[in-house]
Amino acid sequence: MIGVRPTRRTVLSKLVIGSIGVPLLAACSAPAPAPTVAPIAPPAPAATPAAAATPASTTVVSAPKPTAPAASAPAPGATAGVAGSVPGAVVNVGGVRLPTYTPYTGTTPDSPGSADGMIDPGYKTYPANRPKSVQSTPGDGSDINIMTYTGGAVPPATDQNPGWQEVNRQVGSKLNVNMTPFADYFGTKLQVTIAGGELPDLFFIIADPGITLVPEFFNARVADLTPYLSGDAVKDYPNLAAIPTRAWKTTVYDAKIYGVPVPLRPYFWWYWVHQELLDQAGLKQPTNADELKQQLVQFTQPQQGVWGQGVEAGPIYAYGLWMGLFTSIFGAPNNWAVDAASGKFTATFETDQYKQATSYVKDLYAAGIFHPDSSNYNTISARDAFQARKFVYRYDGLEMYGWRQPPVQLTPAPNIQLVKPFGPNGGAGTYWFGRPNFGFVVMPKTLSQDRVKMLLRVLNYLAAPFGTEEDLLLRFGVKRSEWTEDSAAGPVFTDKGKADFMPWRNIVAPAPVAYLPVVAPEFPTLLQQWESQLGAVGVEDASVGLVSRTYAQKGATANRTLGDGLDDIIAGRRPFSDYDQLVKDWLDTVGTTAKSEYQQAYTAAQSKV
Image (tube, rainbow, N blue to C red):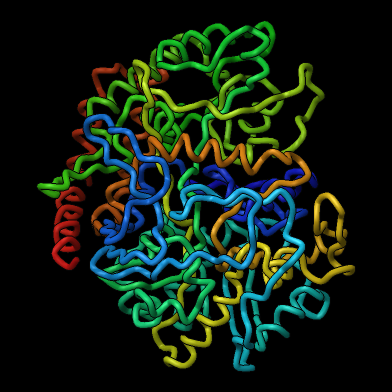
């Protein structure tokens, strides 16, 4: 379900992917190699509602409402967004108090973000004053074995890697990092390690529907971190306290915190347009579904090698239906919705809005607006084609904005912009928030309390916020050997630095920021504007923080079967009348039981608040 990203990228692509300080990659792509400015960004989740299978949490906040723009009323069956993080708030998820959110204030952004973390702080340049965020040596002199993935070539060993050596020196322990290429790590390495006997001190688990995660595994094999991180206890580890609240939600199983997350911003998928083509045609962005269809048809000119929309087909994409694009336009729930009064859950597939979106995408297919290579595209090839302007609209990750030069010179120059959300008949529409984190790092249950505390101190170091002295080392390595200072760009990798780059952020990561100085100096304020637009209409997945064992074990397979059927309906291989039976089969296989289990978990969590 998750493809392998190429192991070579241009310098520009590396810059953009890493510099924003948080995972950016769109679904079904493994990470890029070492970026020229910042750490490797993890791959995105498979584009499937199975993402909801990763346990997430129901949130109760006893503090003022987040400062992000207020969400407009969602369509029937939707669940209004919650995603923010209120500093100092008491947030109970799945029956446990999450770590008290305390944002880092040691650096001053050029354009501040929102207090709840829904809008990223913006930096035009890398901070010149870089404070230390860790004042004492976290390690105890012992070796620490760590297992995680890498998106590119495995970097040189410690004795040939000055940056790695310096991290070990500052940590006060030897970090033995076992790095495995992404596809192999989640394809075999992680499962084999979990199934085996001895576990490393720290190992990374992806929050992905293809990997079955149930409370029994955590209870039996993984250290309970609740006593060390719940509530104000996290203040012993200030950099971990600066990780936004939302990112912690899927680390909870049976009212226990089991991991430290790699946070994702709520805005995972973005709807992009070649604005220069709209301008050239004298058109404004669409404001309803009919206008979008008209533009997609108008721009589809096969004789010119241009189509309206570029998507991926197959069960985990279904021509953009499965990924939340057209379904959010029509107001379908973000995977799961809940009625707060009764606790009753509704799956997105069984709503009229999802069915309407399916009919709409089927009509788009019949109109011929999808690029004919859609059935063969993966995320990378579709992305490349969009950059080459083979189609006008594209649903993809944030890195689509200026992520690299197009493969051919285009006239007029590309101007890729976000499409402002809209509803089927106009209005604000909705937007599906993405999952809270890419994954989280855990520890074996067999460790002593002293060792758990020591490892948390090390993770606190590795989670150093953007612009700190530790962050500079973790991002770039050692000055002169691995990076040099550029007056405009700030730190820039040397060739050795590119080769030496360590994927520390594939273990733990700080809160995201908006930072892209070389390619787009206007990026911070532009991103903040976009985040404000999406946050205003954002819809959260109601299953976040809850566990359905049935969905965790059977959801991915059942979703693939349903996705195959929807893909066939859209492409005309099955009649639209099959829709209801496909959903009924899905409900019989997994959905009905999952709804009941989510309701039980939701009710139990509410009773513990």
